[in-house]
Length: 299
Image 1 (cartoon, rainbow, N blue to C red):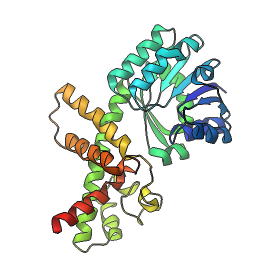
Image 2 (image 1 turned 45 degrees about the horizontal axis):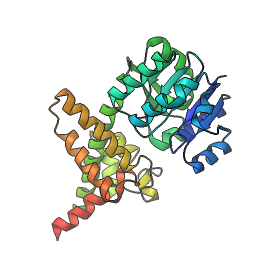
Image 3 (image 1 turned 135 degrees about the horizontal axis):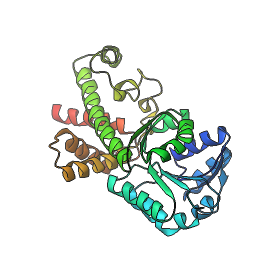
Image 4 (image 1 turned 60 degrees about the vertical axis):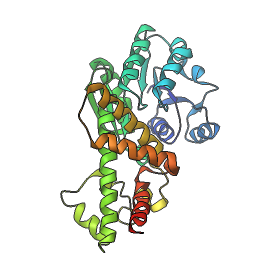
């Protein structure tokens, strides 16, 4: 069993750390939010006084932070210096590819190993231990981390060298954002045509419209009992996070000169959704905006 530091114990990080504890690992955790620390403590995570003390005896350090700036600042401001030589730093945040590469470079320069391993699957996946990990790492570091990632995930994919995991995450979430808008628009159209939500789900979920946004995170209550739509769009995967991830995708599209149209439009739609009250709602709540706007058009 390993001694692991887990920093960032929010909606995603908390359940992930709990899975590691349940598997027999010793987990020292820290979060700047006291409520998150309290919840983690009830699952067996050893609550540290601060992030630096959490990493002191760790063989691996897992971070789940809001942005690349948070990751780089934490690395520079004490984490790397406090860790034992050759500690493996695993960043599970969703950040810019360039920031992921810089984070690994900082870790290596300080005598450690580093990798990016963002996740997909949302809070439900974190709680169930079925997350998908997209990993950018040296082959030997990937093999070292895999037994730990397997505890928290149902699928662990080595995408390539440093930054490749973030590249895969950005591309995946661009698909997700675009597909959720399409699914939500289809349900609103179906409603206006007199089609029940259940009938549309029964057809599309077994036909060419099938996708994760429909079958797992269905934006209308009823067809998928565990979807956020059945609990007034409590996340799940918050609108603010989708807006952030699509912003990363937009940056990458512009930087690479990719001639995309739907990705930038989805980024615009979700940025507006987050700014106008959807930041703390599940991203599938975009359907409520589409419905409201449709009524305005009708009026």
